[in-house]
Length: 138
Image (tube, rainbow, N blue to C red; front, side, top):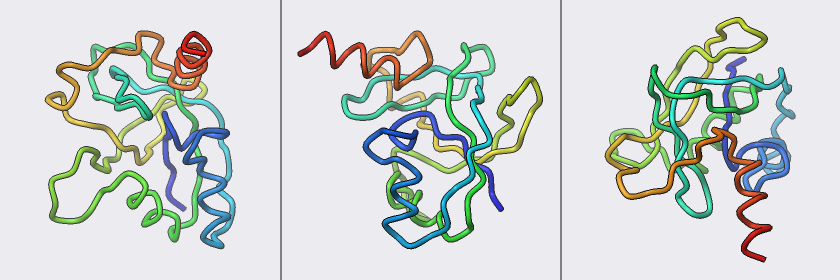
């Protein structure tokens, strides 16, 4: 079973909640392994974040799941990743720290060029940032 690291709208309770996506498609529920971090920088695209992988960046927080193979095409569709096409997000495999240990996970980063004019999310945590931002705007 593949492992995925989700750092934005695929996290539990967010608009593209991984569990809800699996349920909508009749796919076995993903298994939450816990919280993890990856070195990088997180940026605010408005309704979703983008992760730029960066070994010298701060920790970006997300959740690790084991998922059924059948859920991968659903995630690719949500992230608009299509084979042979240049898209905002790409699917990569990277080591994510989980309980201090590296775990190979699939994740969906963006290119550095995509974030040139966007605000950085210094905390590295989309959910906490979005909640604070949305509360301040209300």
